[in-house]
Length: 357
Image 1: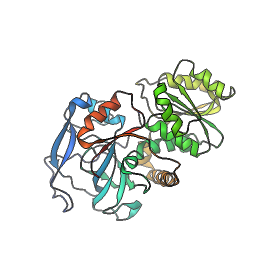
Image 2: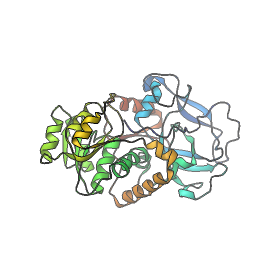
Image 3: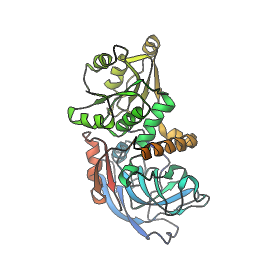
Image 4: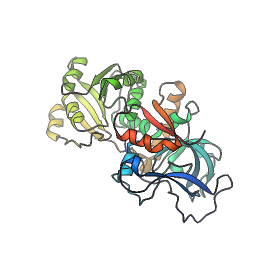
């Protein structure tokens, strides 16, 4: 499970759109819409809808690619923190081209200008065109293909803030990454290696191990009851200095048993579906920190920090130090099947929907 995105939604197109579409966009477009709560393959429908128009502080983007995230599954099931009234457009992360700027959006700021290739995150982008808040749109790294760029924002921003803002990772430290073959996991592995850390990755099955190794993990462990003992064995008994945990449940509990003196456990999600208790007495006796990370709050309250992180991620991408692991790119027409695959919990890396070339 990835960290949930900014709940500020991309404007879901409806039949009551009261403005004229820009000359660069068609009067209507295709969009996948959730018709009611249920499994993604059952409730997603491809509809012809009016093209949205950017209002003040908004940007209209012609979508190239949409990365599939676990919140898309939750949106379809009606379990997401934001619950739009059906029918609504899911999708939270894209790469595309700016078509038009709304009132008050300065051209050129943060690389946003008509014709610019950008990345962005907001609920409601699984469509041919999407309107997003300008604050959620940034220039796409030139060295990344559309599918890779679409998968950059949420996972890599989450991993960046976990490692650098929260854990303050230092060169030479040992970083334990749970779900190391997933979106946030592979991002955390790559970024920890780029920071000079030693990485131990944890995966759900041996079939996923190679993905974590390719991302840069020095050791890869398959999740099991003896995880804490194995981590201690690999660290000479010291334990992990930093833990990045998007899983929760037993993974968190095992982490508390192998965290180092002055270690930091960063909680970024609960893909297991189980929210574990934090035992304050245990943290006190073993002298470690438990840190929560909700990346969307940075987008809302400290967008300057998000801009700085994006600039650093773009630099690392240009140097080849980070690159989103895209497991598969599917046609726009197959979007429901892609979201359903993610719901099954067997995917590695990222699934991306190609909307336009």
